[in-house]
Length: 302
Image 1 (tube, rainbow, N blue to C red):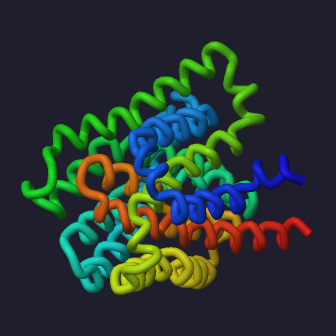
Image 2: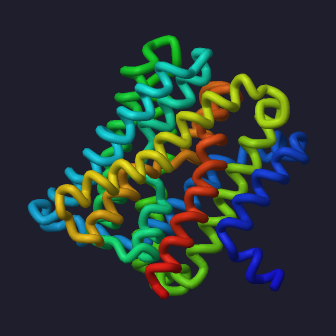
């Protein structure tokens, strides 16, 4: 029973949130582990793809363009518009810029399996956009926050550490035939990597969750609309366009999930504790969103 709980994504993410609220001092001490934890998560996740999967470029173009449009253009725009309207401070605006310009969520791939979506679209689209975000994300952050925020070069260095280096490591793991072994542990590694990030950023923002409801409410409104509400909207649009059910499910995932843990980690590391609040709050609502997606997947399987 205990072992199953420790392998359950919902339990792990929920525990990270609760423990972060209780042990704020410990979370602050673990702050330096947020970036390495994210890098490990991406390295393990990226063992599912190879450089050859992106070749020939002509066949890669469709999933890449569709994923870029759904995750950056559509979802990113919705998040930025809502944040511009609702965020009361500059730091919170920066935090949501980090969420809006973050790469697609790694959870898109496993939930494509759960919902029986278009695996090629989700897999190649997610990791293709991940690589593009290496350059696109720093550019967009600089565009929306300006020179007052942070050096684009420093942010680019962070993106290299979080995206390019893990991808190279993932390919080395495939070369030495470790990828198959890691496949059995992938889910647990990803879940506990996110545990470290969520525990740290929630603990650092303990006061926001427990006392500053004037901040928590508007940040939560943006998170809820950009996930739960958008899922319903995108589902209705894709049904209207008469797409296959597999394509519908992949578009819903691509249009509603960002790597919020990335935004939280970058916010607390390069900007301020307040800038990590949106990423932390979005991560909390994503945990609930993932529970509902899992229930939907279980119904489909039965």
